[in-house]
Length: 306
Image (cartoon, rainbow, N blue to C red; front, top):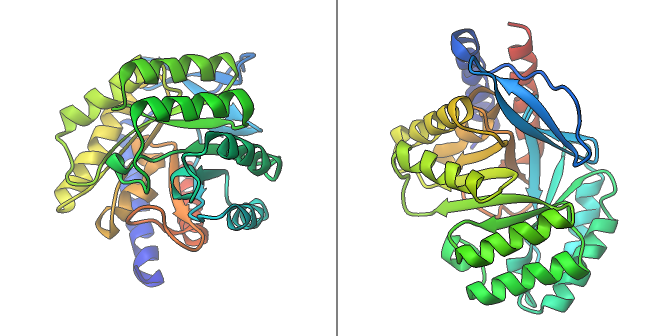
């Protein structure tokens, strides 16, 4: 997407934001911070409580969506170089360490050690560790058992703030990872990726609610659109989930260039984080982090003035 087109899309979103905000947008008023780093906040007319996740002073679930940038390197030295670069970019809130891109992705001991190295380079940014399986668009195939063993090794001998767990792995494995992570103070991003289609709104909401029931701290869905109606369906599902059912922050996106508006509109629909890129994208439709941050900031400032 050209810069002029990108900025036009941001301007259109601001106008849409005025409409949504005046209609029925949720208003978040943080109150006390618990010892686990989670803030309870009433949202919307029914005064539900969304637990805002606060990590390293970054509050996920209020204000403008927090910006995530993933690593895409395959070699240890390249990963560390990328992380050093990301650490120096103030607009980035979360660094996603993509394990599945590594040439030694299945060597759980080496991977756990690398997570400690990466974490040490990010004293002021949130670290999200992710093994995106090939079944959900990642670079490496892994069995459910090996997936669980790898994550448990990271929790035991590695280091991270957030851990991405795919909801469609073995439920026994998923529940064990969630339980172990929470015992060690690591928050769970539970995810579902559909690279072929955008399921109906009702199915999207069902998945997000199931992630919540499984103990996720952040609820994530990414879908592939075939037309603009699919993009609007994902955004509508996000808004409805946020206003009616969510007790945790959301992270949703429609992929490819067609879905770019969903990556910008989180403050309007209720998605608390969004992905940008520095260099090579890790998924279809990611856009330059600096351009993305500019538009997110414009939308945030405009929405606060209404």
